[in-house]
Length: 363
Image (cartoon, rainbow, N blue to C red; front, side, top):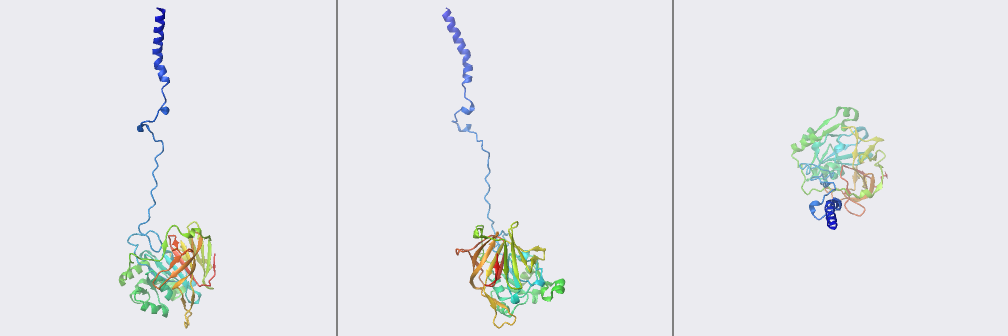
């Protein structure tokens, strides 16, 4: 009887202990097997992928920078600009997409300012006379060429080159696009006082009925991209190009803006519209043979610019040697790196210093 009671006691004790023991042996959630996908909890934070940078749909053939659709095929306008020391400051060069500078006679230089969209330019000047090689620089870009006067050699080209659109701003209906600055006339002289503007030139093009767009397959000769070989070039921040005893150009790289700041005549080179120093993203120095035209008593020059030659390309504080080529008067300049491949130019505005073969270039 006692044995039965003892057995009953043990049985009751086991029943009482069973829930407690079961609770102690239950696994924690961390120990549970992960069999069902709905039990998987993603503890990683949500990461939104960065959108790919979009290529601009329309880019200027002169700068490689984005432009609006209605401007991408605008025909450029190229304007002769005075660079005599007494005629400073010039106006409008910081609005130009491209500026060429080359010697005229007597050791002085003149500039050809090229505007991809002339309607957006401010005042430009002072306007000066034409020379043959500047015409060819403009014609290679299919630009409308603007000048005031010209040499006999230049007029012969302007009158006989049928496919060239130009306007001598000193004659006929063209004079509506210029005015004479009275202060410049008094202080600098009659021939250094003529000014124009983008607005007036745009109106003149409409009046004359000139073609204002280029073909869809237009080729400026400039190849733009972000992978320019200049990144592997020689570091240099100060450049000096001696055009002649009269004119030395200086070009200082400003790392803060990524631009080359121009200087001349012992000081900074400014745009009179804003009093800001001229600044360009790309700097080219091209060596091209020149000589005085035989029999020209004024000492006017001609250049061997139809052909090929050497030069330098500066960008982002670096320099690489390049080769230039121009195959015809109406073809653009083309540029090649040391491997013979098309030179890839960093997008931006460009300045071209065209110096004699024997000119001193320091950097």
